[in-house]
Length: 110
Image 1 (cartoon, rainbow, N blue to C red):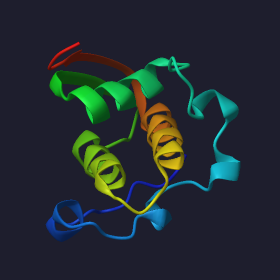
Image 2: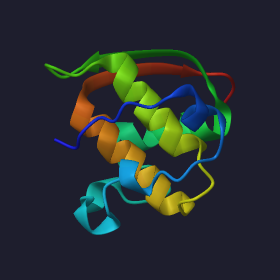
Image 3: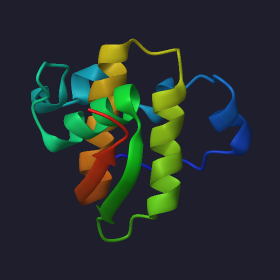
Image 4: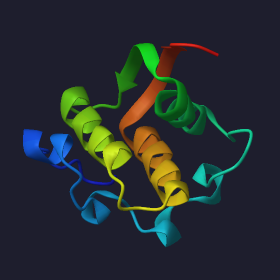
């Protein structure tokens, strides 16, 4: 399992380097790589959150995963301008799959 980092408020608020928070592209399985339409629920979640915004999000964390800590980690990656979008999407979708069993979300608009 990819380790969940402690993310401080400054890292969330300001564009900081996040490469250490992302698995290398070569370590991310193909099923999480950028595609239209999204290949799986985790890529769909990323795209809905990134492009539309969410009105609700329910996650089922895997055993031993601190949901708040994991979401701060994911939000730091999503909010950074550093990585290319394709790597960001693949990394976030993969991290969701590593840390959560399932999800249910609603978007702001469709």
